[in-house]
Length: 123
Length: 244
Figure 1 (tube, rainbow over the protein chains, first blue to last red):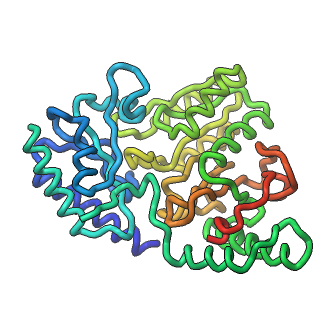
Figure 2 (figure 1 turned 180 degrees about the vertical axis):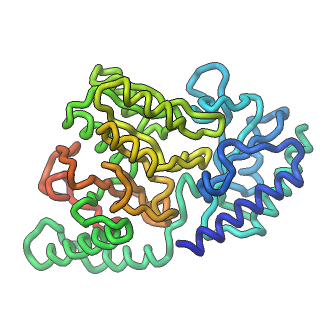
Figure 3 (figure 1 turned 30 degrees about the vertical axis):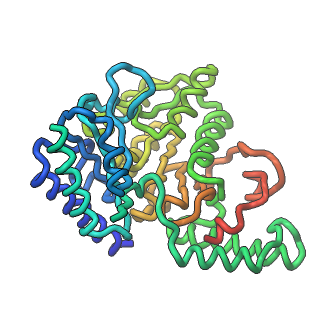
């Protein structure tokens, strides 16, 4: 379990750093301090973009499975009740990437490159 | 390239788990409640799994009850914990998984409890002082706070919440679905009454999990039926799942 933890924490930190480097305006939802944050989950908040609701769909097309949802401003059941409750900006699309021992840095590189492309196209 | 970055939703079955399950499916079909050899063999498998889990969590096998997963375990802890102990007030946050939130909201709607929400900051961290205030100003409470938020990953300090709950004689349930198998939980030290697990979040099979109930707490079953799980949960056990 300890070796899995170190491996997965490293993947998460790697993806966080890489996103900050490659995707302009990226932020993170929730705690990112490793001592206060589950090492398998990274919730990314992307800059406002046109077709924000297409982000997950476009990732899916690119072969990347992740979950998401943004905060909602209207008080309906659509969107994430969690992001709404922490007051996240409803105009910024959010994607939760969650890792396991089976993931690799190559997969992170591929995903970040794809995200960079998608953010540039729709910025 | 196909990439799976949704392990908080579910994980791939570990090949070793599959091998074990396949072996049981192929060879052992007995009903664990039967007293003959076919049944006894399967009963042994279940108790072996229970003992392994209890050992990892530093608790006794008598405190582990197999369920269909996290949602059933959460529902059982919340509904039976509150009703059987005649509690009238519950505390949670707006960030809980719906297995917890919707269960508590339904109980509030039907007039069983008053429900209070602890403040959280913009990163999803619990305001521990506010929790203490809510406990001070209300009847004996049922507290439900998740260990790690499934969307944000933000962690709650279970030791700290346990200490606070103990000081106010509150009952503490934690939805630990995202963290069992990822962190070491030492139940000989944690002051909680209920915690839960869903096997498919940690490379196990879907449709199986467990509820930990502290031995000092007595509750009635949520699902009535046969005497499975020491009269705590009716229904023939998910033998393959438990073996996995």
